[in-house]
Length: 295
Image (tube, rainbow, N blue to C red; front, side, top):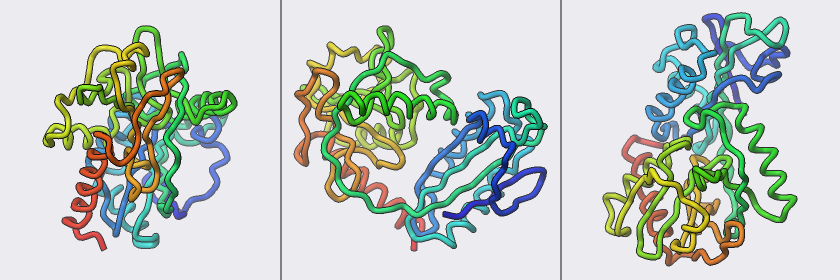
């Protein structure tokens, strides 16, 4: 793992920042993306969302941070020191604080590059819905993941693998780190359109699905995916940057869902609709890196 920090107009090696509000108050925003052979996967989309999160958060002044081209150069320099497959974390905080409450006025950006470890296939997930919400879900705020860890631990204690954000009005929204999809028994691919963080991998899945002939319909639905609607669904899965998506033995992590609450009828395996979409994604990702000269 290697890092660099930007503050007050210059970059420096990572050191422990004892008075940083990101550490003491989980105050900040973040972005995560994959890299292979020095090539960043959809860098523009991720950086655009980072800027959107900083602006929407109101506490972070992008004018005091380096421009996109400079940040990208720093990331690419760090990647030269890491293995061919890596995960890049970008963290922006309001910076240091004399009273650990109010920022001193100099936001900080931390870039962290770590090796992307190979993982093993996990069994299909058993999830429980939690009647809780992420505040400002359209922004990737660090504080929200602290709450997610608490709800995740609660779900594990109840015998589940993780949880899904759910509300009586909104229906099922997303996982703690992932976007949520269902496939109906008639082959329609749906994902919530509102009150969720619209992931970059989610966007790619939707575009690939629309161009394919796998599904009878592909849609970001403005209506709520209520629990009762799951009776009409044959598959459910999660997608995220680090997981890469859903079922395929060749990808490592698996995000297929076997059960949600008492609904345990979801199909899993290599012959499902979602498995076909996963294979399209793997091909797309491989070509993306290859076309851009990944070493």
